[in-house]
Image (cartoon, rainbow, N blue to C red; front, side, top):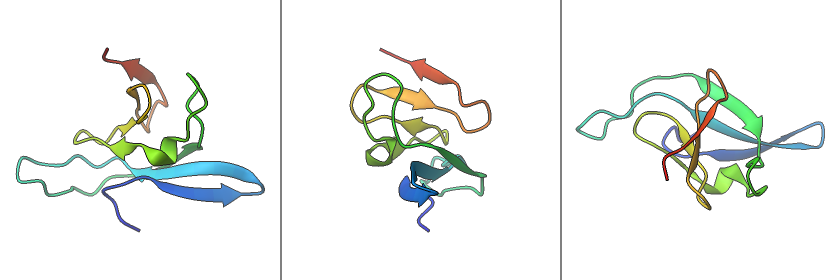
Length: 80
């Protein structure tokens, strides 16, 4: 799978998003990280997180309102 973007998946009828949380260096080379799985639904407005993007720090960004999700803690942050 492409480590630079989120992927849709389904397990036992549940829609999931998978992404790699490895950071991207200044030369745009993706470092090895961990694969994460989370429900493919942003808690803010239920937008599909699989339509977002993986940021340089490895967090998953919701494309609709900019909420970010970290794989290890599944915490979210709103920079805006």
